[in-house]
View (cartoon, rainbow, N blue to C red):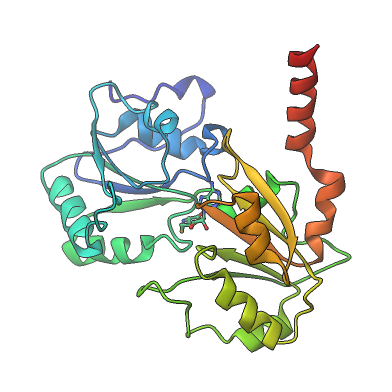
Length: 275
Ligand code: SAH
């Protein structure tokens, strides 16, 4: 089957040609957050090269005869080098495969999608980019936290809590971020939260400022720790916050008390189950 089985929607979605790579975002986890382009790609791809954050339900949408290649960390072993992943994708495309490169969230947001795309350009492999819902936006929405809100912020900063070496990024002007961005949305920040807290407090942020740590956003195991900048490290540990997690600092976190729609749905389902 090469025709997309979402053809019945009547949309003119692209045909996946052999020898092409589609660099695709899979969203934060809930399969319902896949784009139609992503599903169209999943239905046609010969090979899926996927990362750790792409779950089995999403992979299950692939053609039954598609080859699934894992490109992430496995069992404590270091992840394959980025260069090796890029070379593999090029190799598959040159062999005439339709290659769907699936990444969590959006491929161009802290996902090294740009690097992979550049390798494709260098190798002369034609590609398409299928954007996805990034955890920093959609993941927070699943916790009932808007990343902007008219009364609180007209600026939001997305940053990564560790750089290519795994350390807290020195490339970030933490004082400037602390001063200039009322809402700070942090990817990959759980490990170095202590250091990040130190830098943000030094930059003038109040210890009492609300923070939320959203683990496994949009998945059944989603968990949210509501805390403050001053007590975040201790509360994260006590609350059992685990990676992958989005961390958000700012007044928007307070909106969750009214907007936690998923919590409300779960509570209702719990009442029904308990009745
Ligand atoms: N390209 C991805 C980000 C990849 S970096 C995107 O746009 O979302 C990996 C980091 O993303 C994780 O360390 C975590 O901070 C965040 N992340 C991805 N999926 C997540 C999820 N379901 N819940 C919470 N955080 C998530």
